[in-house]
Length: 416
Image (cartoon, rainbow, N blue to C red; front, side, top):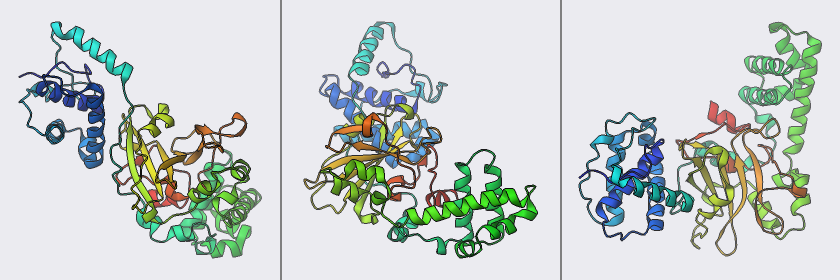
């Protein structure tokens, strides 16, 4: 038998094509309407999230045969019965924008299709995450094996030449345009001269000039200015890293010092071992620019099993048009009632010089209200990428960042 009329005609994304397939099996095998529309929509979103978690390889290749086979098996497992044979051959050879054109719609069914589309669009529910399925996380060995224990300590003495280079390159990315090539040249010369953290602190400005001056067009006086900037940044780095993340931020202290949320805030702003953090992911139906924290939070599981060891949960958000590219992380803390409470979110998109990738937002006001991107005096709080625990910024293995966070050593772990 031919497939029922498509929901999306033609489907423009892999998600819309996937949704068409699932609806077709339901309509072909559920003639009495036993599956309520709202249940069906949740079932489809649950299937989509399962598919993304289990088969990122198929998702990346958009292999039609494999997708159709998976949908058929998932539908049969969910509904508990075999499917009626549906002829989907017209979709194996389509030439649509990304996934092939939809099946032709018969004239007499056109009105039904329009009515159903209007219903779905006007009553569409947000994405459904399903269970809190734990996923493998990137940089797990680098961070959780040892780094998190010393995260709040200044470790300049143990820096390798590569760490020194990456520190200077990070400065160059936020410096004035005229300073960027000079800082990059100093970083390269320091690395090639085998300058580690101990040597940098001992030799300081003169060492950096000596390493660089013979290999570039700039005079020593110009290089001295940039080298002084590097050493001052290093001094500030050491001072900043002598306290925990909450105490490093006077703004946070002003916001939460008299709040009932203070224990949760200070706890969530601490480094944590792997056993305490649950990593999962959710696919948004919105684009990366239109992701809405409040609607996403509505569909994240809130109850944590009492016997679970996790104290925190990080939910990586991917937009449906790029399902393997993380645009945001939602950061949750477990309260005394074993409920997940959304506290912060990390943004992996750049918003000008003041908000590089990896910056973060407050989503819980001092009185406890959920207010996305909250800030005092009607402002928006922007935490810098290096002012939160690194575990906030880790994402599922096999996925990529919309933009790699401007933070070391995380950036160096990812790039190298």
